[in-house]
Every structure is written in C-alpha cells, then in structure tokens.
Image (cartoon, rainbow, N blue to C red; front, side, top):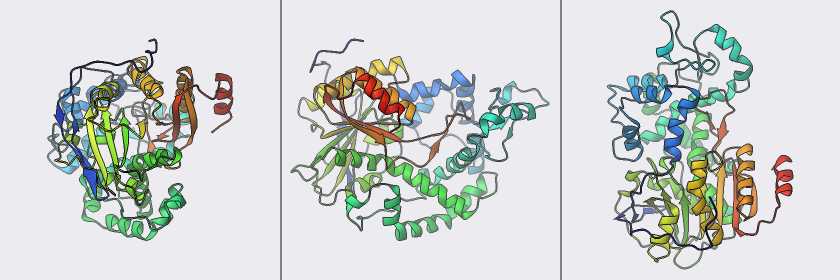
Length: 460
C-alpha cells in the first residue's frame, strides 16, 4: 500500500457521541463512541490465530466459558455483558473451566476430545502450567520445556492471582510520591519509594478473605507467602506499566505538563487490555509522577475499546492535578479528522501505542499505515512499545522504511515484570508487556538501514 500524500484528509460522516473519565483526584471525560465498519482487530486476530498451533482450541475456550460464539466472547470484552455472567454455579466451577481452556498436549497439540479412552492429559508437576497426553510426549518435549519451565511456574500462579485484581480485592498502593519524581527511574526505585505502604498493602491482601477463597476454589495447594507476594508484585507492575510508560514518554520528550489547560496523550490502538475493567484510580500514578501538573488528559482510541469504558458520567473540564481518562471507538485517522481537526478534541502532546503488532500481519500493517503516516507527517511525538528484542528489530525496520525520525529506543525501565505465555504455544519463551520502547518524531530518519541493523544486532 503506497504512502498517502502528506496531510491528506479522510472524509467520513461525524461520529455519534457517548461519554467517560478518571483522576489522581482522577476523573473520566465524554469522548465520542463510534461503531466503525469491521477492521483488522488485534483482539480478533489473536483469538483466531490460536487455531494455527492448536486446531480446535478457540472452540474449546468458548465451550468452557459457556459461550456460543466469538461474538458473545467479544461482547463481554466490550463491556456489553457481565464479566461474571458466564453461567458458572460456583467459584470452583469457574476456575476449573478456565483451567480446562489450557488443557492440550504441549507436544502433539492433542485436545481432550482427541484422546483415546486410555489417555488423559496431565500437568507438568514442576510448573503446573503445561499438559501432556503421556510420558512419551513429555519426554520428547522436555528439551524445549526445560528452558521455560521455571518462568511458566510464575505464569501459572499469576494467572490465578489476577482474579484478585478483577474482583477489586487487590487495590494498588497510591498517593503522592514521597521523593523527587526524577529519582524514580525504574521499578527498583519505585519499590523502594513505596516500601512501607506496599508492605502493608501486600500483607492485607495475603491475609484477606478473598485470598483464602481464591485458593480454596482452585483445586491446588496454596503456595508459600513469599510466592504469593512475588506474584502480587508482578501483577502490580503489570497494572502500572502502562501509566508509567506514558510518563516515560512525557519525560523523554520533555513535554511541558505545566502548561495552561493541561496536556493530552492519545493512546492509539487501545483494546480491551487497556480499557476492560479499567478503574478511575488505575492512572493515578501517572499524575503523581508529575507533581504540580495542570491536568493530564488520556484518550484511548481503537476499534476494540470496551463499550463499558465510555459509560461513566463525566465533565469536559480538565482540573489542575487531575488525570482524565476517556475512550473513543474507531480508527485513529478517522478520529483525527472528525474530532481533532474540527477542534472538538485536544491536539495531542504525545501519542502512545502499546504493542500495535503491525510487524506481525499484513492486514494489521495495512490498517496501521494511515495512522503511522499521519503521526509522521503531522510531527506528533510518538512512543510505541513492543514485547521482545525480535519485535523491536522488526518494528524499527518498518519505521525506517516509512522514513520516520527515530529519536530513541531501548529497554523500558517500567516494563511489566509479569511473564506472558503464548497461549497456543506454551513452550515459546515468555515475553513481558512494554519490554521495549521506540520514540519517533516526524520524518527524515537519522539512521540508515545498515546502521539500524548494526545497532539492533549489537543489543539495545
């Protein structure tokens, strides 16, 4: 697909409007909710790509979650149905059914329905994360599995502990930072700064009724306290990685958050990951990163933004010291023409996209191209995150080919510490949310292709 001419306009009818907001006093603002024609969706592509590695897995997931179709599954992610409305009779049944969605042989990819009566899927006793249909498959798979077994043990615990975040039983520590924001350069200094408050929070969760109920329901022994505490810390970094990565971008680009009227960040390509079950306080930490700011407006834009994210009543006024969240459902280049260019929505000081995935699929690349060119041509400061060094190299090459001016890239000091397993390929090396970042501004790339390959091959 050829690049469009610079600042080319896309004309579409104006979108309908529906509200939402968040604050450190945190608030959520009215931003248009548009229902666009079907477009490549990273949520949908991710779900159906399960079939590539494990035929029948997507149907198994729907069956175990008591759903009839992907559309019903998507309705829950979009906020159009209750997260607790899967029809489970008790927590034990819910956790059992959810665990059943991981039951397939990690070596031969056999599902329970494909096994003979004499065979049954059994977990790896070390990680409790992957399954095998028999000793032969487990032995054959061990050379690959041994490299990731320890990390997958963490994944298995985190997968269960995450329920505490969903139910609200684990509330993140919050409040103004007790030290200079410039001193907080990563998780080590963040944990040190929050030390006393964090210890009290973790102790309260570990001793809570919700924790007792969780482990009484999952059908396996409760791990030691230090294992549970480690999981809570990883989940905390996962929840805070996105807001603090926004702060990293504001810092790195020297954006003035003390300007009259406040500052605006657009999160482009936002999906259910950024919006499903997002609560007002989830972005408080971004505000505390910039004491004295005059308001931070964060607008989530994407075709997979959860409908429930835009339901709260809100006020368009951006008060000093508040972080205001809002959502728009649709493509960013359409949003730009219909809302930004018309003056209805603030021009962004920064655009951030978490894991766009345009390197992985021609369909996604085609969908992203108008937005990437718009950001380049309008010289919008942009930060992109990726999961791995391999993805970093591929994404950098695409951006070089688009003649973007890459100003910085590297390991993200606020990357999530929670390992992410590839669902349908369990022995693939786990990755970490927001592991690396790329910042670009305008065109005329500073690095030619050979220089870029040398820098990436040499490490970041």
